[in-house]
Amino acid sequence: MISSIPPAAIFIGGALFVPFLRGKLKSAFMLFLPVLAFAILVNMPEGKYWIVKFLGNDLIFGRVDRLSMVFGYIFTIISFIGILFALKVEDDLQHVSALMYAGGALGITFSGDFLSLYVFWELLAISSTFLILARRTKASQGAAFRYVLVHVFGGLCLLAGIMIYIHDSGTTEFSYIGLSGIGSWLIFIGVALNAAIPPLHPWLQDAYPEATVTGAVFMSALTTKSAVYVMARTFPGTELLIWVGAFMTAMPIFYAVLENDIRRVLAYSLINQVGFMMCGIGIGTALAINGTVSHAFCHILYKALLFMSAGSVLHMTGKIRCTDLGGLYKTMPLTCLFCMIGAASISAFPLFSGFVSKSMIISAAAYGKLTVVWLILQFASAGVFHHAGIKVPFFTFFGHDSGIRTKEPPLNMLLAMGIAAFLCVAIAIFPGPLYNILPYPVDYVPYTGAHVVGQLQLLMFGALAFCLLILSGYYPAEMRAMNLDTDWFYRKGGRLFYYVASMILNGINALSDRAIARAIPVWLGRLSRTPISSLVTLYVKATGKGPAAVVAVEGERETRPEATSLAPMGAAVFLSLVFLFSLFVVFAFVA
Image 1 (cartoon, rainbow, N blue to C red):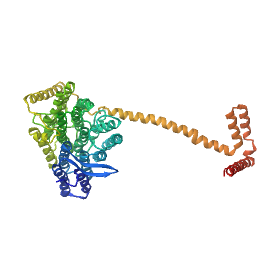
Image 2: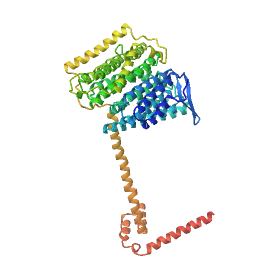
Image 3: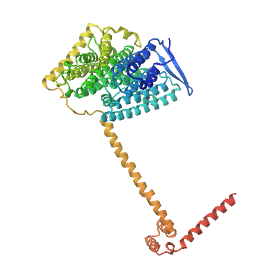
Image 4: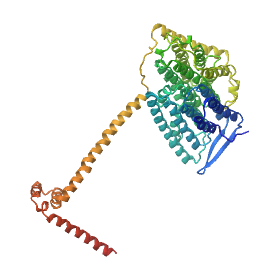
């Protein structure tokens, strides 16, 4: 049975009632929303629903196919987990923003036209901004300001691209477009910005670590994965994405190793994982698209688990830097266990979810004889294990003893992490249910001897490299510092642009002030006081009669009777009468 309410509307409409509810009723209501949306999703057959006429166009709020259903499922599941994790937060701003945010992601997923897609795209950007602002610190305010500016730019690119595309193609249908004109390029840039494709990525590691503890969980799951979905829908098989994605997998590794802030490390590893998905979309084969979609599904779970683990530590200790943490496994054993499950999943250890999804993309690169890309992806896999698989749990829960003695986070947080950890393991052991909902039929067996042994060799090599670097003292020291990224260019470039624009525009303003705003009134005032001598002076200067004539006229100016007698006023009256009479004659003859 098809409900008359789209899943997105359940979240968006439900968010409006949250501020009016209290206590356990509010908690039950918020948890009920994703459960209801999920129940609707599992009963939705493929097709198009909720079509509304608008200015002669069809707004389609329910385009249901296998691609949209996978993202619909995982967005609903992670919304339930995120709400459970945030259940004890007494801040309606966060709850309303998170529900609106989830509604925006589901709206994008089931949009069948570009117009409704754009509306939900902007809702996604606005609602997520409030999850950063809700932390209510000076750093979060600055990050939120930069975040919304960047996404306004991306939204404008998307809107301009959509308008041009509709004008050129004559259709509003949200489907494959490919890179074939200025409109499609603008759409590509707008989506690439949300996907954090370099060099448009710095907003991610700038904003996510400054979000609230619970807000970062939603943000890690929805914005970039919505972009992955749109990219998979509109640009599959685009070769540019192969190389962009491969670069994305490798570049963040170096920054993640240098970072001291745990949530910033996770932000860089998120870019790395989205790189695998972009690469899969670029390859575009059935295996690659299946790998991309399944990896997005798994990544949302284990990345949210890692952000929940880091957020729990921040919530209980107030600290999030590697230099301030260590030894927490003694007092937070369950959080430590969940973090290690997330770390094993993102590292693609056998029996953890990343193993059954990421390897599909790498295999697709091998089948496509993309040797260089395959090598980069293998290197990136080892790098992920190095920073997210080892560094995050090691410096947070082991390493040196920081002396911090705290306790486990509240029960709802533990339950949320437990559900995500359970799914990470369950999907890895029983990948069949996930494979059955992928866009194309799956003919892939992850647990072969060669694959298991090869992956373990790669991971053990990464672990050996980490141990050797630590023991030899060559591992980059954890220190309080700011790493320069590509945002340096637009931050410094922005200041340079402001300086140049200020010099040019203020110079024009000053020149106009001197030449027009001040000089003309002065000249007109002088003309009104001594009209004849001023006109004569102007005439002499214009005709070049010579400085002697000018001096003669100017020398007589102060002694002319017009400055002290009625003669000049009479001349002015006479000239006015002549002017009026001329007008009368003209109008009389014309009439």
